[in-house]
Image (tube, rainbow, N blue to C red; front, top):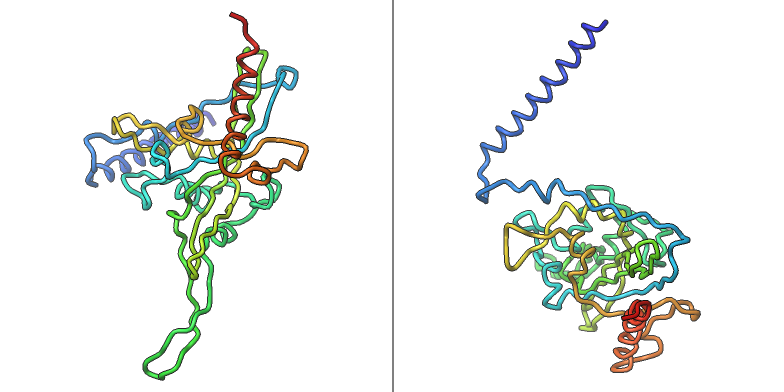
Length: 284
């Protein structure tokens, strides 16, 4: 019996070695557009969050903020429009994860991740819909109805809404933040030239961390040391502004009661309130 088990284990080891050798040989036969093979980001895992207890959270505030991908600091998340050098834009990576890696996606109807949707609903939210239009046929000299399917245009996603929680953990004596979800915001123009802006879908950030950790973001100063999308969000390498906080008015957004400079001042007030809370905890 032991000899049979040893024989089976030997076959498994030899088979795994042969498969690895064949895969390596296949890669060696293919031209590589680099001086080395990238392995670090491809095999990277997200750093686990420290454990939290409800008793250790002395204070928390939930806020929503907008990351405008047209800002210079955020451009690495907007480009490339099409896949280039194994790099994806943020929205392209989300669509890839939803379609090919089973990343769960939730309806824009609410941001509590309670209504899951499928990839077809995501395509519809991204504007990949089928419409009927009339096309002139020169052979019959008549207008005929033709179905036209619109492709997904990732460049229409100009903003990302981020839902996050700021909290003070007395176990570590620090103010920290955890991102809960992200929602791409699509900005497009209809046939009449009117500009529309709409939310598309919600992604639960903890469920997407593994995908984000395995894909890199362009580094303008060093091509050999690129951060992952998880690094960008976790280390806060992005520019944003607050548009909403938890409140007793059904968590209404700032735009519902302030416009223009008043909305900007309200956003700054919320940000300073979080900063001052941490500042007032210490004495010097």
